[in-house]
Image 1 (cartoon, helix red, strand yellow):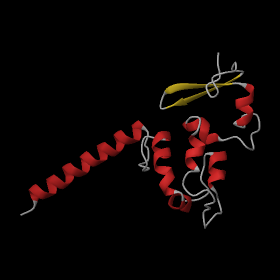
Image 2: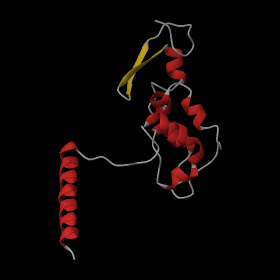
Image 3: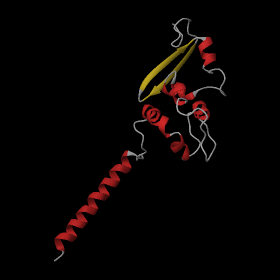
Amino acid sequence: MLCDVCKCNDATVFLTQILEGKMHKVNLCEACSKEKGVQDPTSFALADLLLGIGAAEEIEKGAPAQKCPVCGFSQADFKKTGRLGCSECYVTFGEGLNSLLKAMHKGTEHVGKLPERAQRAVALNHRIQIKQLESELSNSP
């Protein structure tokens, strides 16, 4: 099996990720895996794995030396960890993040999540409140 990056050498490192319920495999030769930092966790570009090879370079296209004024987090830090330092980072690095967040998640706005059982309970409470309010309306003069 050939390396997915250089397409020349035999792949010796096999990475698998599941994104939006679909499995994606990345096959790398020894040279490309070392170049991407796969064997050295301190320089490993997590964004490349999450979003595909070359994604980390796209992150850096914005402003290369930009740092968050609140926490001091840099784009290189995000490239390595796949996480931001604080809420202000979203504003600081906002331009480059929208497309990356869309690729990583269903959307770019957090809407929360409830277990199905809780959703049914909330819906039932709403129906009860609506009936009570309708009853009060019909009984009022």
